[in-house]
Image (cartoon, rainbow, N blue to C red):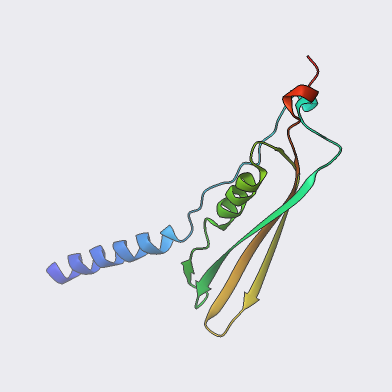
Length: 122
């Protein structure tokens, strides 16, 4: 009986650990209204891009996969600084290997820089 209880505990822990590989954080790009476009130079966007990768070992064990979208978008926000991010494009790619698959998320966006205070109309 004790062996059965220990086996159930082990199975529960194993199932829990396997399901952890299916959990990821959602990335919200945002829906901005009334942003005050007069504060941004909408004529001269700068294109920025960022990539983040993860690996799935033996098509079963995820390594750094679940947060790759979040990591790539955080890099976009860092590159944008106080600029306005728009025209976001998300590209997914993968490469098969002998022991697993590499998944890569690439995000490309336009960043509209903030106008200098002297140029903003009051």
